[in-house]
Length: 372
Ligand code: ATP
Image (cartoon, rainbow, N blue to C red; front, side):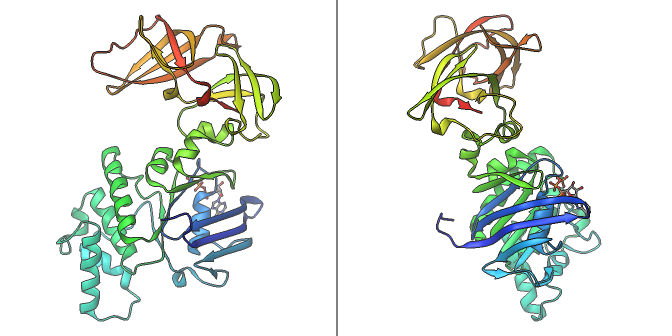
């Protein structure tokens, strides 16, 4: 997938009303051919509705949906070059694996032998070669998911729509299937559009992600940009962990904003470290991710330009990582308590985890801060 790939799905000012309820509020979106694209947002934000309008299961109230350059207005779901994999994956337990996959060909005029070859090819694609005669009810969750994928891919749609396809699987299987889905998508080169409320899943799998709130797209970006440069506080809060500290703006000159942050001191921030204003913002805040600051042990040196002092309030040990909740010296109080910040440190063999109550130093760089 390249930046110049042709558009596969275009939504222009798509609106959807369910009676009084305004579920999609002007969606403008281009998904490129061959892209692994995710619609990410909390429950009720409209991501499933958007997926279903692309599939043709829902009519739109106004706007335009184009697939591969063609206006979909009068094209019913079964005539669109799309196929859908559902959360419940709707496998027929009383049929064999091959019969389940062949269900994707029920309207296809090809001969039995040709269909059988297509089923074998689809099963091989999802790593289920030789499973054709197995009873579907005897499969594991992950295998059922693969059967559903094979069935959806058998006619090689231009677009595969996936509605929370992994949410029924346990964590380990889900992580394994995420990697397999990425590989499969690269191998078949079909445009995948995934709906998920799981930000980690979206970050792991997608070329680009549209974050949705209240029927609108709040940010559309690649995973790294989304994580490092969220455009609003709400996006920042939804993707991973972001610390927020109240800030005072001291002034702006030549595109550089000077900010005072109790606990961190005075910092100068260039324009690319300043987020977009959001009507929900309550006042300027500085945000930073837990892994961008480092705890410095007694007698240790560091190469960061800035250092702050803090006391450790909480330590959560995860084996490979430790999370520390800290109170910065001089941090502004909110509701009578100093605003806590969370720092994550990768555990290194031979370096002690610091204890609750320890006075400690925190090394950081102004380059990791975002002003919201
Ligand atoms: P979830 O992850 O919970 O499925 P979502 O982001 O996919 O959430 P949608 O299913 O798209 O959300 O629903 C968006 C909003 O539209 C919700 O408030 C929902 O109640 C409403 N909605 C969806 N389908 C209908 C319908 N058929 N009739 C009325 N309201 C609907």
